[in-house]
Length: 255
Image (cartoon, rainbow, N blue to C red; front, side):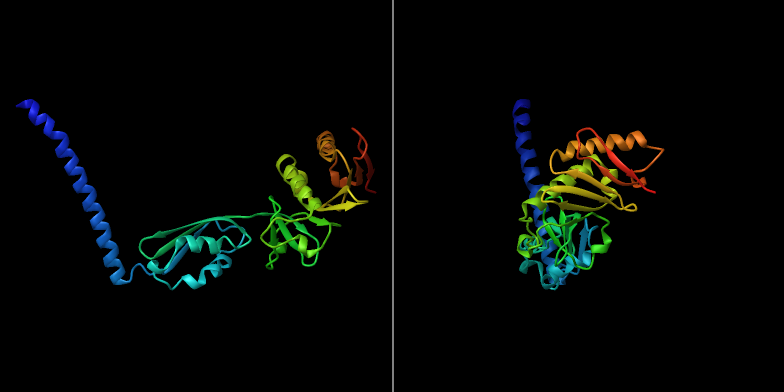
């Protein structure tokens, strides 16, 4: 008898679990049905998270046509697709937060350089072209000059097509990661004589000639040079620094 009673216990537990789950689903469904009748599922608020590069109002404009619709007329996936067409958005996730709230989580593209051209545009770490929407002055980032300015090479929202620009963006990514101090003090990166890289610092300014090959190893030499003179002089104390010769730094001091 005891054995038979024990064998019935798992079935009782299973029925109880099914009943609890079914009740939860029913209560949730009734709550949403009641909310729809009362109008509480109408979108009356959009909450943005992750908007630091641009004001969230810039992204809100992308979704204006959805703000007055009911949730049963809205495809959150379509909203996400529309929002991700904004050039400053790398990825987005949209979810419905009961009652009547849409939560929009975004990952933005951060400009790391400005391309001097007509029109002037910015580029992120992946070489994606970002338009100037009156915010150029908000970013103290280096300007790329003497590159091919043809507008068709810089489609807004897509990666730049210029090989030299893409190479320079990859180079600036390295600089920002491994020599942050120099990147932050960089006003301009220009190409001369075809492929020769020249850096112009924001302070005073100082010109740093890197040449057209082995440029990263020369940056490492510059970094060691700066550490060696640290406390006594700054790079801005020199009119120019010529790094084109192996393991040498030729300088001209500022008068």
